Amino acid sequence: MKILVTNDDGINAPGLKILKTIALQLADEDNIFTVAPSGERSGVGHCISYTSPMMITEIDKNQFSVDGYPADCVLAGIYHVFNGQKPDLVLSGVNRGNNSAENVLYSGTIGAAIEGALQGIKSIALSQYYGPQNLNLKNPFEASEVHGVKVINDILAHKLPKTEGYKIFYNVNFPPTAAQNVSGTRYVKQGLRPNSFFSTKTHKSPSGKDFLFVEGGNQHAALSENTDAKVNMDGYISITPMKADLTDYDTLNHLNNNK
Picture 1 (cartoon, rainbow, N blue to C red):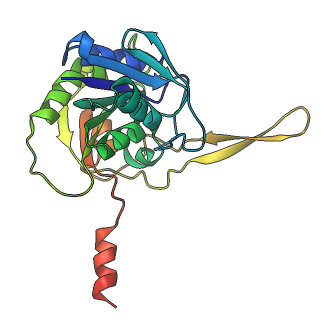
Picture 2 (cartoon, rainbow, N blue to C red):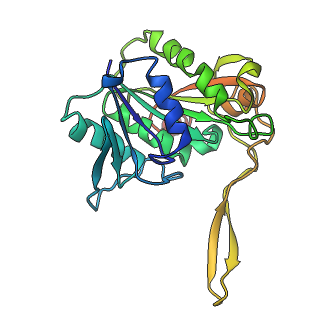
């Protein structure tokens, strides 16, 4: 099995090293290829470098740095590193922080998995929730490092019926706990943190210019049952199957039935 590993935190991110460790338990080292952004690319979603070229540099055997976005890295991996021969699996992460609930829509980690799915490759995004129980651990990624292989193998073991249209990708979030305190794994839907929004905060420079910094909402807000962020807060690993199709079918059917 050939695996393409990427992320949105950059080629030197600690979570990428964790993901490489996980991948090494799934395939031989010669079949694992890392293609990751040259620097931090969090929050870029499914952005691609459509209007400008990007530089790719081989920095070690089977390890490439791309001056672009996570989705770019998947494209670079397929069409440059693999020369058009698609890998069997795309793994994106392990992200520093959760990509549950509304964070899905902003995440470059998810963007890479979306691109993998659009290319017809089984793709899994993995993220590590941060909180008081794991933030100060020697390895805050402990839960994902210990449980990651089992989760991926469980996903790969499921034989799903073939369907037309957009391909499935998986969003995995590990809870903000030590590995020994993980309660289990749950397949759940994407959640929503009520009244928790991204915003901007203004800082004025000494010269009087305004600079805006984006701030995230409360990542530990109360949530609906059987959703990703809720089970994460309860100590469970969440697995959410997703598609790039953003159609709201309930509303579409309502509109068509009430012409």
